[in-house]
Image: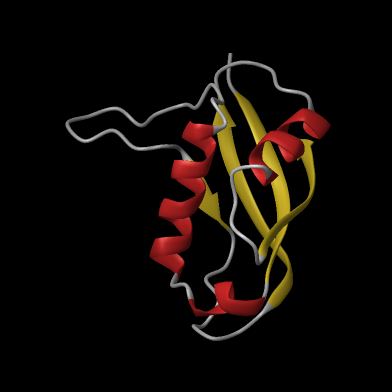
Length: 100
């Protein structure tokens, strides 16, 4: 069974200079380090099933960006936020998460 976890994050300070593609990579690495049961795409080069709703222009800060990741096992929302936040650099803050 798959679980979609939608989370809201903010991007501020020096992290406003990170590109959309680098932000995707940053979240993928942080989720692997947090040891989440991530759903991977199938095929020759599998990657984490992660999507960020809107790509911010380079240099802009944001308080309410949305992203969705697919997990293969249930993870409590507060546990997801805590574990992911511990792996992220200063400037990226997880505000909340909900299962959809």
